[in-house]
Length: 399
Image (cartoon, rainbow, N blue to C red; front, side):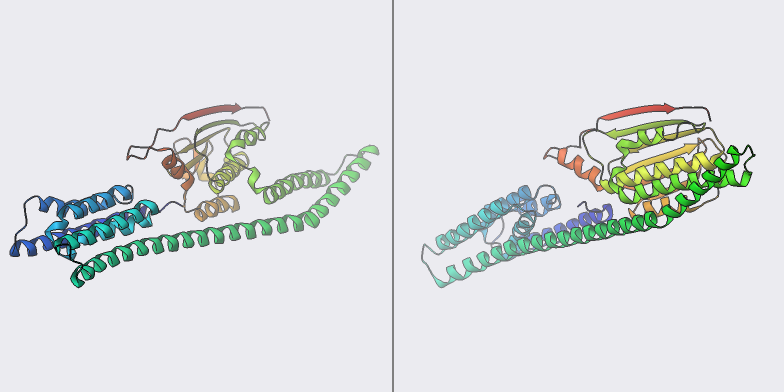
């Protein structure tokens, strides 16, 4: 699950604040020691090294911990007080939180042994009560940091799993509701429309058989019944087969609009190496479908342009026609598109554009950024530029 950009920014600021506090603590411990027995010059960079690298822990937790531990070991013989050990304790906790358990446990065992041996050597290799007290104090705080990082990691993992389970339950409930609605529509409305269509067709057939001119109203009833049957079938397909409508089938969608007097141009620029999330993929397909339907029925133009692209974390869908934007009245289709985009945290623009009446949707999709991160190197190098494949198809036919 990807952390929202605002949360990441807040996390970076918090890291800087924590690093500043730890830097003040370590420098303060050095100042106290300098006021007493003095501190060698090489100790000051070592005191500042740990807090200085701490803001990098989210990407390099192991390196941050090792730098802090190395700095603590290097100045351990100076006995600068407990404040100088705070950066190492925090680094141990965050490395454990990041999931590097073996390295963190090994580091804690090393520091525990190093602390005991150092205190023992300072006491002339005499196992006194002071040696045990100081050693157990440091070892205890190391284990507190270790346990704190692990408990926080498990808590966050539990919360993420609970959120995932809740989302899956909501999706299953929505799918069950769609199936129930489709079943009710099929059992009631489909039957009634079919009866109307059959009766109108029989009446037209009998009228033509008798050599009479069918009434225009009767012809209109039959045509309306045919249109209603087709639209109802599409609705039932949408409700029952929610996963079948993906951007990979958008060309098939275009083919269905042939014969309506429109030139439909589609340019789809999609990364071949990273998959689009199911929700964003389905929403993009539905937006293209609804926008094409509106263009064919209401635009008054004769050309439609469909463009699908992507950025690092956003799927962009744009459908524009050369009709008159002023004549468009918002209806259920546009409302449904806006609700679909809002549900995913995206943005929808509907109105005049450079080409004509334009529907532009920006749909967030964490799958895009996750795929880029998984394909990047362990270093902080930028993710590889996605390979872009452009597909252009033109569907043109006379009405």
